[in-house]
Length: 96
Image (cartoon, rainbow, N blue to C red; front, side):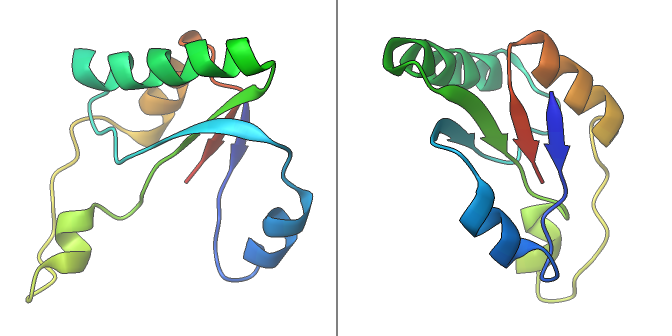
């Protein structure tokens, strides 16, 4: 699985160099059964369309960004564990 850390310095590059895919978009903290169902549904569509499967996550947590005082948020799992689970689900590219 390819892992791509998006930021302002490489966003233009990835806009121009990414390939067609089916993408599941969300924070996916914990990657619980509901998250897995969303990702597997995207995987099924990707297979039908013969496209790669991508997941785009967020870092920092949306609550951190949206809170007025930008307080810290406890993550359910580290990014490395999340990536491992996504890879086991057949994700080709993980953007975060």
